[in-house]
Image (tube, rainbow, N blue to C red; front, top):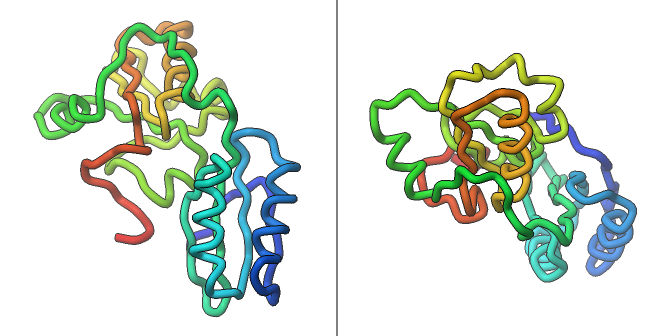
Amino acid sequence: MTILTTDLVLDAKGLACPMPIVKTKKAMNGLEAGQVLEVLATDKGSKADIKAWAQSSGHQYIGTIEDGEVLKHYLRKSSNEEKGERKHPNVTSNEELEKKLASIEKIVVLDVREEAEYIFNHIPGAISIPMGELEDRLSELNSEDEIFVVCRTGKRSDFAAQKLAEKGFTKVINVVPGMSEWTGTTNSLNN
């Protein structure tokens, strides 16, 4: 069983609809933007309910893992800035990244989403360094490599690309719109 690092675990086991949603909403209000909530539930309807609630409230539904009778739902609190202005000058599309991956060129794909987002769905071979850990883990990257930075919408990857450029990385490209609309090959818990 995969163990995911989350910011808060909410125990909603034994509760029937609508209580898992009520408790999830309250727990989400206490989180900061970008943090990941794990909801433990036994109500089978909670999978559809929590996914629909997350989408209607603007939060990200990452996925659900079934662990025996317990459903482990993962959600990421969104921020109002997720679709904001981008500042890193080197930007490419998902389609262009797919073409690069299919070619024989040596490139690095850096995924700056949270660990739970990465585990549920990522580009094969992508390096996972969550945005909050990037500064401390720069030594894991080669400043000479061509680095394509991805996140869910292109916002966190924009910040990461700016940070890498400030630190002397010269071939950094932000991928937009990122994993929210990625149609290429992925590795995921559901494969």
